[in-house]
Image (cartoon, rainbow, N blue to C red; front, side, top):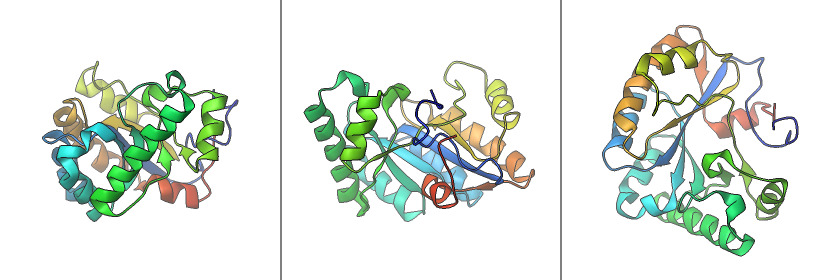
Length: 209
């Protein structure tokens, strides 16, 4: 998949000791604040890919995410796989979510992570035409299915340099994810890695490997 789509951001520069923590499916009124509190504890910045229809009652959380220096991206509006949407409908869903984020915090994101990681060459072409850039990952532990310890081991034992790690702060996963983050950050910092946002990874020479 990565070889077929080299212009999609899958990870950063593997020669740099940098990691991007990313969170999908928020904002969640109870669980996103838990994750933000842990990130603030360690002065770590991450990137949050948001669902549009979760923003309405949680605009204050979008504002907080941005105010605390984290990156923002678009996940979707209603968490349907992009290839299942007609082009006009997909464009509309992306614009709605982009506008909701901008209205909440004044920042209009252009990085997009497709739900379930599903996209086609046509999807990617449309996103580029509309001014968006696909952001994927190279590490996505199934923390919602496996024990806490397995997830921590999966993350910390992987090839970390340039990694884009996906966790989920939505759908009620935030309490567990906050514990995961509270454990992995000091472990990874102890290995002399820096945590950066996706946009920084891109500027630092990141590519679609």
